[in-house]
Length: 161
Image (cartoon, rainbow, N blue to C red; front, side, top):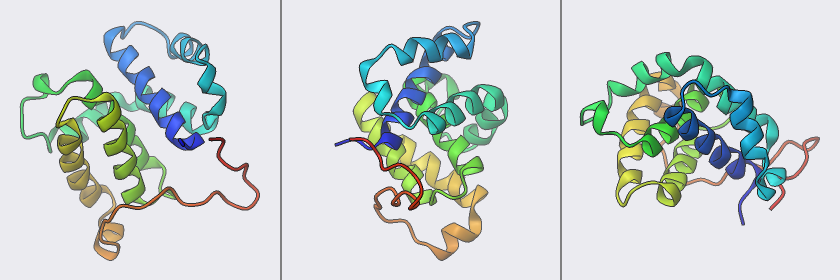
């Protein structure tokens, strides 16, 4: 079962992908299109909006941050992988309450779902290096291992499955 946060990330990746193919399309129109999906109601709307609008606002800075860790020309990075990397880069930079291993693991799982055969390996390698740069203390103190999303705060709504 997918958590509301996983669904939010998946919809955000789809929105970022759509924007890459249609860069003149307003984010509000992309959001409207994604909301037409019946499963959107089960997504964490706040996280979705934070990621989608945050990436589109900071796409140039996030792209510059990521490209230094590519082991291939950026023109060879698929739009799906790029969308996933942008999503995770935004979270690593702005969602400091979410542990970096969770962000990376979510990106890997989304890459396995939407990306090419070995796309998840590329995503993993880039994000491991980015995490070491943007969250050096957390990386130093908390070696990465597969972790589930942390439980919601007591006053937060539980994730819809």
